[in-house]
Image 1: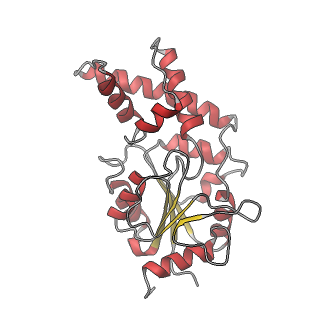
Image 2 (image 1 turned 60 degrees about the vertical axis):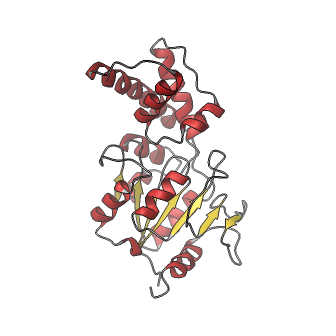
Image 3 (image 1 turned 90 degrees about the horizontal axis):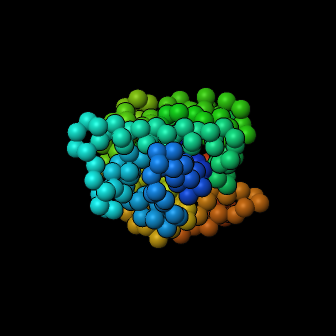
Length: 259
């Protein structure tokens, strides 16, 4: 019997490599639509990812670049309009199946579903983005496998604040000790740990490689699989070469020995 009851996934960078070739491209398309000469290349976007949330990222970029923003409601509307246009472009990309799930993600989701493990999402992206990504991943109706999609502006403070995880735990009716969080970034790791989710797996990507993931007990380069082995940067994978339910159970029992 597994020692945990639920897996709570981040989305961007965790379920799929959405940032560089998804969100960044969609932001640039939205800027062009608005007649702006802004262009976020891969390196700049990597720096902007220090700020969680799309609207917050736009504001941060404008402040950093010395671009004035109307302090009235018109300024808020301008940022919201850019973000809405970006979301339209991004959703169109998802519907075309241009952003696949990361290595091992679908395999692990299938294992969890077959074992009766509850599935949830805790993310700063929008609910629409999550559903479109999952349902155009090659597994029909994948979003329906998730009992909870805690996304977007449901909470006042975005990651690295713990709010979205605290909300997810309350909605699931579970304690932090009942769950494993799966993240990809320092902001996400800090958020999960601050919510008490000590059983934390981090799957790095090109943007988050080299970040500080705090007390995360297991950090890998991917979930992997039989044909695409994973490598541990913190902790170990034991006798296996990918992350499966058995490895996650060992992680959970390592953190909560009495479970």
